Image (tube, rainbow, N blue to C red; front, top):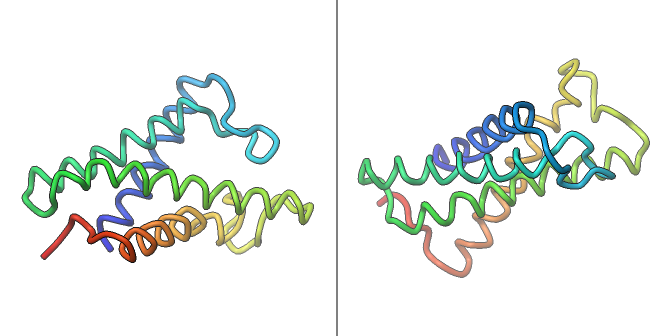
Length: 131
């Protein structure tokens, strides 16, 4: 669980700062106009770094370095799906509970996508982490 949360958080933070600093072409402007390809790729790099740290610490096998960016991509897709649903509903924020953050769902949309991806992976192959 810690790995999963760290991958999502690292991807989100790296993506945000790289996208803001580097800019560049938009990832999917109609659905999420602020997401850039530079931020997307930086998110994957951040996720891979989380996996690499776990390998170096002896907590996971090397496959986690490849799985982590895939999980980050699934998290990014969770965020995109939530943005798409909000746009279709004609609302800017999913709720007003956390002002300026698009609502409570914005804190969990990427985690929902990542959890789904890890669950599906686990149905097919063993996860290269833990004991």
